[in-house]
Amino acid sequence: MSRSSWYTQFRYQRTSKPGGIIDNDWWQYQLEIRPWYFKNDDAIFWAPIPKNQPQIENYDGLRAVGDRMFSLDEIPILRLSETWRNQTAKVRLRMLGRVELQTGLWSPFENVGGQVSLGLNVNNFILTSYYYIGYAKDISAYHKRTKHFGFGFELR
Image 1: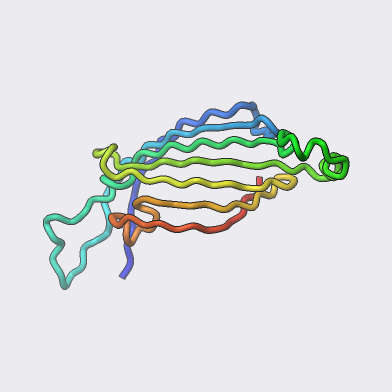
Image 2: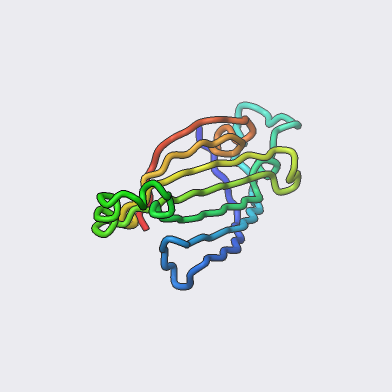
């Protein structure tokens, strides 16, 4: 059995630098609205759908994301190290902080969740770690509150 959803996404995004240039003082934020159409494909021919079936738009539909890149040179103790200054001349090391909040489209203050990420940027290859708590991370259990952490990477 599988589940599928159809939605449209409207996004407003603003960045600090035009043209997608990411440097030490780079930041961005995004606001997203996701109206769901055709709902979930929950029709099972051998079982009726309960009348109180949770609706995904009550758990996911509004999102806000904020990103901020900062240089590790801003940490005073590292600036004092000559070894550190020589290393950063060869390889650019920066940190990326990200906060994401999400909630339902029609009940925006009932089912709030979010994610906090911290990443190390080495020449636009970003190793990240994150902690997530909230709803709708997984399409098969969008109505259950989950908590988990993980690791990943991004290429920019």
